Image (cartoon, rainbow, N blue to C red; front, side, top):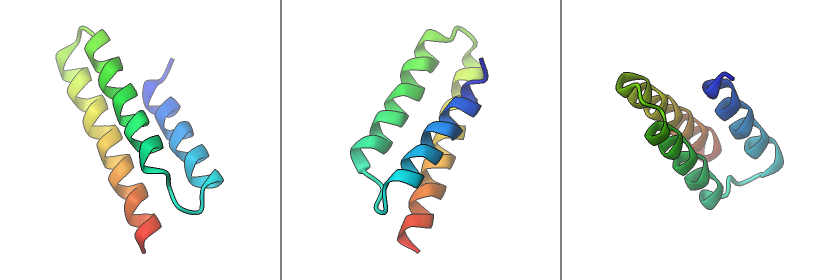
Length: 66
């Protein structure tokens, strides 16, 4: 399972179904990524996944606020 693709799909779904992104939904996505990282034993993969999701979230917020 490609974790990054799953988050990408989840964020795309949120973006497509909300004119204004629900902050709680974004927080949930971030919480899921952190929970996944805690489960994952490979430390560098944890950090990369969290950074990746943080980047996606910040880009999504930028798109909404523009």
